[in-house]
Image 1 (spheres, rainbow, N blue to C red):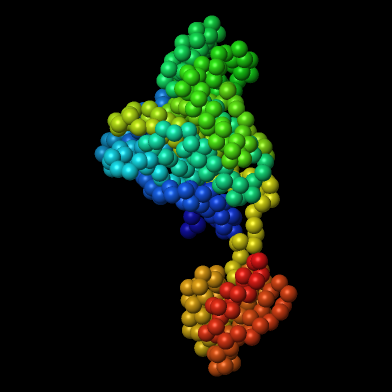
Image 2 (cartoon, rainbow, N blue to C red):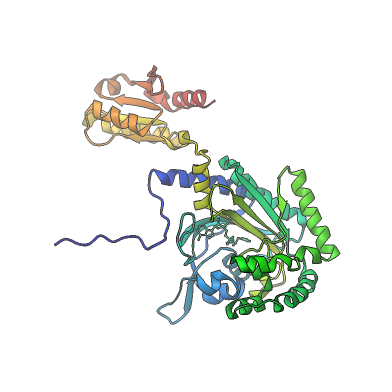
Amino acid sequence: MKFEKIQAPKGVREYLPPESKAFEWVREQLISPARLAGYQLMELPVFEDTNLFSRGVGESTDVVSKEMYTFEDRGGRSITLRPEGTAGVMRAVIEQNLDRGQLPVKVWYSGQYFRAERPQAGRYRQFYQVGIEAIGLDDPAIDAEVISIAYTGFKNIGLKNFTLQITSLGDAASRLAHRKDLQKFYKSLDLDEATAVRAEINPLRLFDDKRPEMVAAMENAPLLLDYLSSDAQKNFDMVQSYLKNLGIAFSVNPRMVRGLDYYTGTTFEFVHSDLGAQSGIGGGGRYDGLMELLGGQPLSGIGFGLGVDRALLAAVSENVLPSQAFISDVFLIPIGEEAKTPVLQIAAKLRQARITTEIAFGDRSLKGAMKAADKGGARFVIVVGATEVETGSVDVKRMEDGVITSVKIDQLPREISSLLSGQRS
Ligand code: HAM
């Protein structure tokens, strides 16, 4: 009987070798600046109580109103696959009382997120993010630090064709003043029912409406940046001044609207010019009311989420993936059964010295094994047979130029390390 093949669900992104190496490398470049800044890992469930997102992310958003994977579990609870990371972090911080300890709480995370969007290049139903959150400190300097961590991640990859856009959603007084005028303005427009409902919950959503007639209608809409209270303006000026002094180029985009409702104060987006419609490679901002909204104390917070899939697409487009980082240092070829134990031992020692080492398993001919080594792109190849085991010495062949160095087996980790550092410098 022949079984039908099963395919991955529509729109999911998965990474298999050899591409997964590049994915892993890109993700690591995005994470490492957060680690260097003292952010600590938080591993959270991929599913949560649906209320966490409907309340935290907001009913007016596409994410909550159209894109959530929501289902009833076997106990009759409404569960949702996480569409983003911030609400879950906040839930955990409140639940585990992290906000009662040292502030700010600084965490990073990385994983799969789920949005039932229409799949296209760079937009997936399961995608990957790296994110950070800094909770409990209201200081424009940390806003600049958070932005600079994201910026450094993209720079680590080697990306150049991206820009940073920032704006401020001000404080409560600024938003209240603006909302009044914006409401007056949009009431003069002829909105369809769904749009009017969305505007009622969050009128800023109207700036996010991509339909040409709405873009035109919003041309003369009052902009929140013109309503900043003097405190909020001072705060935003400080953020800009810190960024300038860090040498981070940005532009102020007063019409930028993030897709999630919890934002306040500084908000930002990184946009890559090679990615067409899905150009947002990362974004974030301050969310000063979120903790309280989720039942915690009124602490402020700021963070970002970076799209690993899109950062990888950008890296491919800019041709900045360092192919050298993806190949093994050493390829060991045992000849005959009696060489297998020594080769396993040599490999263990080399790996202990953090040298990436592969073994040509399976009794291939020397020619076949050399071919495999060549194809794999290993830097050095070592053949181990009865003679090598007996003499305790091997020939290390540098594949780049065929140069052979004779090395004592017990000296291999040291010798290979120095050969490698010579090659890398
Ligand atoms: P977001 O802008 O919704 O923010 O998502 C962050 C990044 O995730 C986007 O810039 C994009 O690169 C990537 N992304 C989003 N949706 C998709 C998709 N369907 N396919 C591929 N990539 C996607 C947040 O999620 C906030 N939680 C960020 C944040 C953290 N704000 C404060 N703290």
